[in-house]
Length: 428
Image 1 (tube, rainbow, N blue to C red):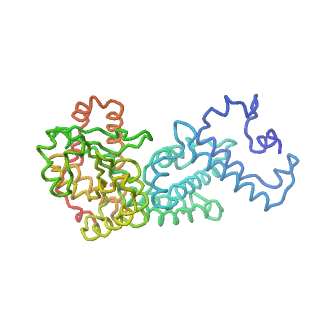
Image 2: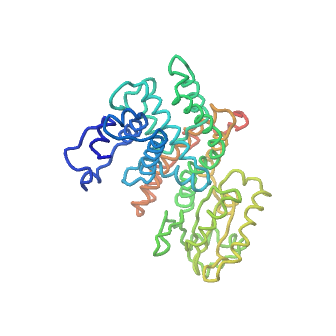
């Protein structure tokens, strides 16, 4: 079908210049405009097609609609511009967990948009002017940014769209939306531990930096490249006299590290905790975090590994992988430990330790079976994630001023969140 007839069919304005002009291809199409095109295509009927001289079957039309939605979805997931359509963190966590979380999240939000589009009664879908809910805010908050669409949020949407005063319950788009809402609840239950881990990674890393640099005056860099391939551990600690005076004897005794040969320690934090994530963690073994003169510490932060027996079993699963590595990769210089062991060995104390403890409490709350508690905790985690990530970005772009940045941007979560002595049991 000629493009002019197609645009007329979906009530899209005809361009004055060719659609394939490079200047137009490079221009970012806004998310709502892509949704508008998708929704208009879904509303095409056989009669509409016949009106522009195109004849096909009902089956072919269904296939066309499905493919159109798929193409638009894949385009947005490719994030071809500097400003992403879809949160890169959500894409990453979906790949890590092997659960199509972001795809389910996208499908759900798209279905919400389509239900609102159906009752907007406009030639053009206007995301900022949808009835009942502002769809633009939903897009920005849940898809462009990695905010959790929690159980509480989903139950509220389910109640809203199940209200016959708001929506026609016999409409297929409403029936499909309610099914997607119920399906998403199961997906979120599976993915939420890893989501909490993603959100706590930057504040945990920042707390450790504050301990190492502000408290212990150690020489540490954030995301320093270790090879020509651009691999970057979270933290790189340079061995100097100050470090040796504080830690060398203890660490040598515990891990057998010879500090006459080792010049740096590289630290990388991981939320992995189960067999499915072994590949994700073991991929770090091939990033040159360890070498003849460097030891790689993989710090396992997941709260499920607070159980020492479970932690030992999980860490032992890496032994066969390490045993198969060539000697040129220095597997003997890879050390995998839990966050609790890391805190103990490296003497994390004071405000940084309190921050790590508070972060753990919020993570536990986020995984509460109480939807209200979980929702509030996830909202807090995303605030901490955003603040810590911005601080780490400042450090990355201006490493020479790392001390000043940490001093001015230091987190004290005991003040930020109130009483640090509250127990998670009080909330469950």
